[in-house]
Image 1 (spheres, rainbow, N blue to C red):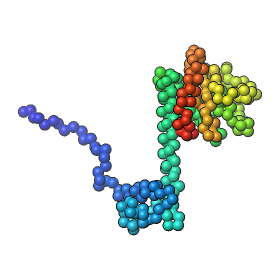
Image 2 (tube, rainbow, N blue to C red):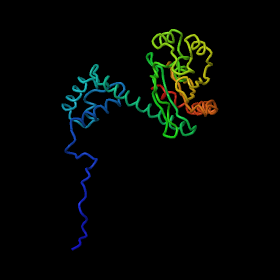
Image 3 (tube, one colour):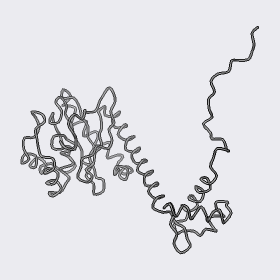
Image 4 (spheres, rainbow, N blue to C red):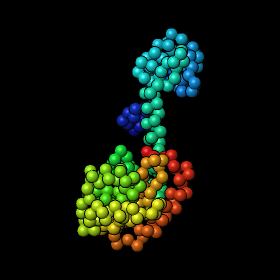
Length: 266
């Protein structure tokens, strides 16, 4: 006989934790951390206990534990955020900046129709921090280590052009000029002359020096004292689009750079 009752389906666990599974001491410690964070000039245990809704002995025990672990520090009876808490805050801020950069690159990729790269020169190394591409407009495949072949691609040439003579010399001593395609710059003297002739804030153009069949352009970016660049790439048969696309990227960057300046230093 038919029934109106539907067969039981697979159980879907709730995404919300049951109150009995929560760890009360962790909750209380987090409330104390939040209270301390609201007092830039520090606060005493009694005030923090009151704000967190805790008994003073409980609050004091948790405050001592947090201080021992480095999340708080105590000075003259007042509690401040410690180095461990500041590292957590710094990591969250960096993650937010990375997200801002990734969103901007994706926006420019869609507006211009090219892969967009963001790279920096950090502690003597070329680092590609973020790439926005798609199946229809793929990024250049890193077939030779980007760090070791900075002389051969637009990103590296743009970053090296922003370095001082000593830093540039150090880099080339560690990563000598070598031909990786028939179009790669032939020797260090030619590369250095090219870098010296690079005009400030002008796109650096590279045609098939790193990857056959690919042309690239890189634009210097002001990121405090750090050398940085935004770059694009195109198939060689679309080389006539390269400079106009680079100029468009430069215009797009100019519109965003006021609010974007802090985010690009990731």
